[in-house]
Image (cartoon, rainbow, N blue to C red):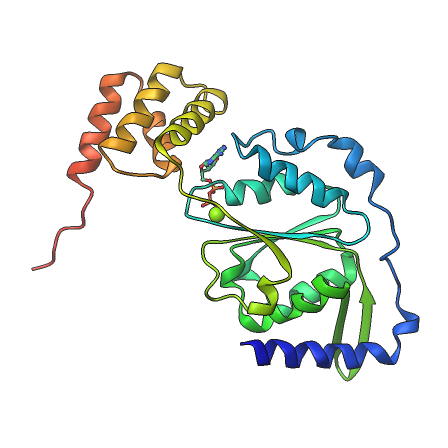
Length: 261
Ligand SMILES: Nc1ncnc2c1ncn2[C@@H]1O[C@H](COP(=O)(O)OP(=O)(O)O)[C@@H](O)[C@H]1O
Ligand SMILES: [Mg+2]
């Protein structure tokens, strides 16, 4: 893995070296005043996320890192708010969102040349084909992107922050991983799970707090689920605590696919 990443990287550099002087160098550009004044604190930017105050602060520090972008990768179990962090980052001006499974090398590089995004946001980067991951190596290290199309070479330099998520890091290139500040989220404990559920259900879904608390309890203890999405589904089906119990009981009765005979 290391070798293929390195090989591509050095090829990119030799292309680039030829006319490094002609680079449209954006690296000196200062942090976008508008972007930061809009979000004076990580709290505003991540207002929809419950908890994770230290992670919010790290993002904030990264956004203020004027000299050199600090790229952040969130790794963790499902339903731990990784995608939510990416969605919130989309509020930043000149941000571009892409799904690892939908990216194509030419598509992404083409976009980088054309739009020169300041923030490249990649959800589930582990699904990005390895050849596409290699395109990111140079962008993240030097800001340089290069492409040869129809025997024409072009290159440029960007100042782009890469924010990404991953469920696991096994399929990721080692050199790519090392370019990120990697933050591993742990599964929610009961207390966090309940807090997030109550906050989310009462604020976003307009559900009474006692019903929200009941939903969190039964999803955790009866369904044995750790996925807040289950709480949202159940809360939207139930009006009373009895409804909550009934929906969960029914879900349990139908929770397994019957064995085929
Ligand atoms: N800390 C949190 N604050 C607010 N909502 C949360 C939090 N954790 C999970 N959720 C909710 O749980 C669901 C799953 O979150 P998501 O970001 O898609 O998880 P992941 O990408 O880690 O699988 C979403 O509906 C999200 O709103
Ligand atoms: Mg996700």
